[in-house]
Length: 166
Image 1 (tube, rainbow, N blue to C red):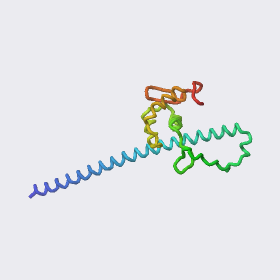
Image 2 (cartoon, one colour):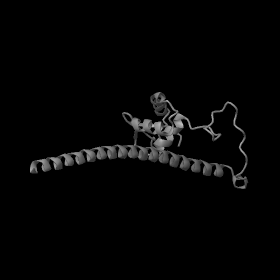
Image 3 (tube, rainbow, N blue to C red):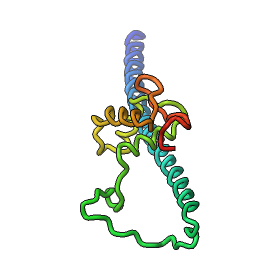
Image 4 (cartoon, one colour):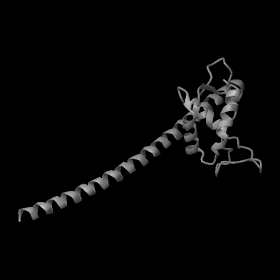
């Protein structure tokens, strides 16, 4: 009699352990997906933050170059885009080029950025860009001294005074 009861308890314990294992696996999967989404959101935020900072610097620079810019109204209508100009979906503005996306991302980093991280960022923020052009684009940017090759497959902004657009 006792052995039947013990077997029933053991069977129930095995069933509970199996259920808990399934829940653990599902929770691990959800956590991995959430971490991927958080990384993608962080990357998109970093890119947007860098773009906003650069845009503000450019606007301030333009204001300095144009002495009467303070007198210009802010609500001057934009001219309509050319019919054949590429436009962002629903925004009426041209989307950043591959070069602009790369520079915006790399400029926002304190240290060199591995090519794989650049590719992952581009896949996240611009899935319409084909990554087959990334290698030649990075090579061209290094050749033009807009980017520096920090190590094999790692890129950064060249130090001030050694080329680049700064």
